[in-house]
Image 1 (spheres, rainbow, N blue to C red):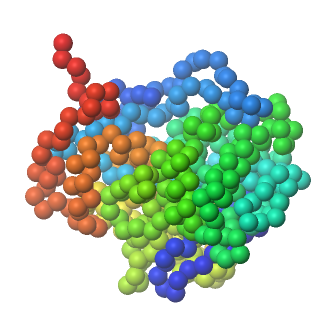
Image 2: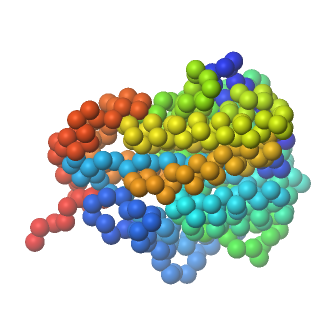
Image 3: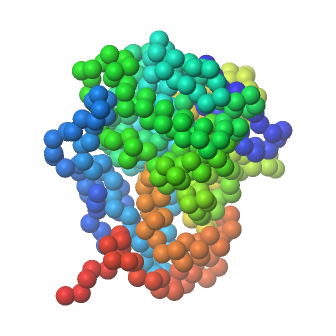
Length: 421
């Protein structure tokens, strides 16, 4: 069921894996993005649940624990955002989804879970999936079973109610030539996205689990961003995503600099971070660390598991401190619910979460919360932030660097001053 991945010799260019399931509001502050340690986030209104379609999903009101973003004040240092995201998120016997939900809650973090639509489709109904440029029922990461779908639905439900975001990792995870996503047209991408949504909206019908609780969100409204398989096909995907109302994409490779819009979407690409012991940098994802340590062998030399995990942890922490003490660019980290090399990368990610998410001025958030904050800022402020290079702090200090009073926020935009009476 595992997908195929490729990596350039030594330097990561655009390799990223998909994990198979079997392996794999409104705040009240007027001045700054609320600190999740002290903020009192809005709760979903206590209104009746409105089922959608067959009851696989439902409208339950505004998402809980989603603080209102605020515009930076003149001279205010930006918070350090860190986004932890998971490709092909699903719950299996390893119970890594439920584990990292608990880790996030314990460390004041929210995350983004990129759900693969076929993880909500039972294997016996695989022919319902009609992948672009492939025969019906084909998937390079397989499908699921009733028990796995029920477990995944439970975790998705709880994750969303805790303020996490549910994105998409699409369906069959086709990479490379011969119908891989890099060869897909805009219409192919639209078809794939439509099917991914459909499998989420009909999982009760497809499994027969009609008495199960619904997912507490309208997936058409919840779904605002994605990461493509193997970071391929970004160009045509972004065209399709823009037409479908998506707000961001994280399928590229970039340096640790402030995001900008690309084809109408926020480009919050994966990033290159230090790779301890090497002269080149490394993509900020567990799979890519693994490939540069044990190759495509997912269970290498057990004697090296500890040092490999430490290498990933230390590389991510170096990337964090480079931004935290420098340009404050958001740090983007991607992962999979896998136990590659004895689970060493899961240990590394957990240690990074514990080390950074409770630090002062740090916000460990989902992509949704990050782009909400970006949308709330004055464009001139973001332009100045983008002028800072990797690890570069303002020479004259933040107060002076961002002192030039930005234009007032338009009426009704988060951070706008109250109307005078």
